[in-house]
Length: 68
Image 1 (cartoon, rainbow, N blue to C red):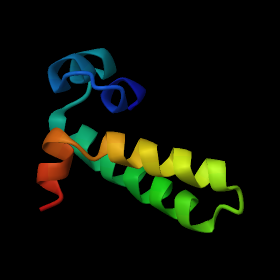
Image 2 (cartoon, rainbow, N blue to C red):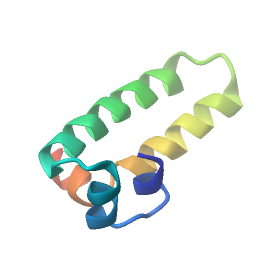
Image 3 (cartoon, helix red, strand yellow):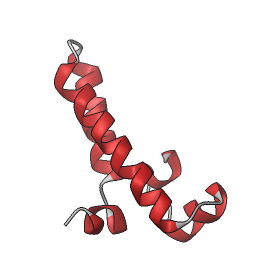
Image 4 (cartoon, helix red, strand yellow):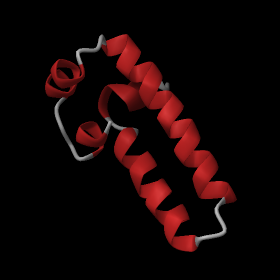
């Protein structure tokens, strides 16, 4: 997920993770849900901002498209 969030290509991420695209999208959506919850409930403003930035990094490409 870190590689994807930092702009890695889907092909590279899937090869590195030895994962099918559908599994990756499902995990990404779960990660987005967790990061969204952290950004909402955190009492630490810096943690909330970091979670929101990470969420934006995960929600791109096929992951963003699959959310439609």
